[in-house]
Each structure stands twice: as structure tokens, then as C-alpha cells.
Length: 152
Image (cartoon, rainbow, N blue to C red):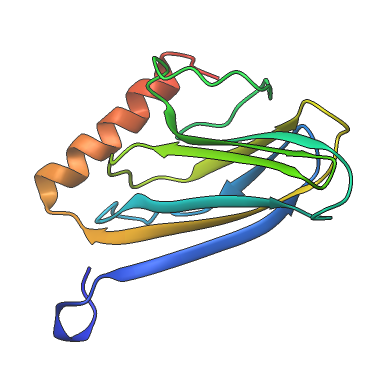
């Protein structure tokens, strides 16, 4: 979907997550004609510069029953992930990787802190894409296949 003068539409989402929780980003439409792709994923501790944090943030196509720190790129439902480590107000490390896949259903963000259980803020930018009938069908069928396969 395009804005005036050919600019792309970017939707932003942000939130604060407690350790071992999941947020739902509602994106589905009645006809599935609007798709999205991740263009930016970032996170920062709720209390920056405070306690030690080793946070893992993951974005999935399906709801998760287990929230952990394992990032497995062979999982077809994983759209992206990030890891942030903050130590003693002096060491900072961040890594973000996300897929360029287009999806048209709700997505799910999970957060797990391996250190002290500190809350984490996230910021997510999605590019909105108008899907033609064949792209709509492919995106919807991928989602149905993942749900029917019993993937968590």
C-alpha cells in the first residue's frame, strides 16, 4: 500500500514486556489483501543503565507455548530475533536479524531474560504492502499450514 507520491506506509509498534511473556500484534484483515514485512526491530531495557540484562526477543508467525532464549533459524515460523546484553553499566551488545518475508496475519513477540528477569521495551517497524490475489493466497496458505502442523 502506498502513501502519496509513492512513499511506502510504515506501521510502528512498541511496548514493554515482562520476562517470559508474549505480545500479540494484530494485523489480520477480513480479506487478507494487506501484507507486512519487518523493516526494523529494536529493544532497550526498561531501566537502561540499571541491572544486568541478557534479553532475547523473538517475532513469530504463530503463538508460542514455550518462551525461551533459543533462536532457531530452521523454525519456519520465526520471522526475526534480537539479543541484547547489558553488564555493569559498561558492556553493551545488540544483535538483530529478521526475515524479509511478507505475512498477512497476526504476529507474536516473545521476550526472555536469561539474567535478572528485567523488563524490556521493544520497537517494531513494519512496511505495509498491498497484496494481489496470488500473493494473498500464498501468505494465507503458509499461515494455515503452520497452524495445522501443530507448530506452537
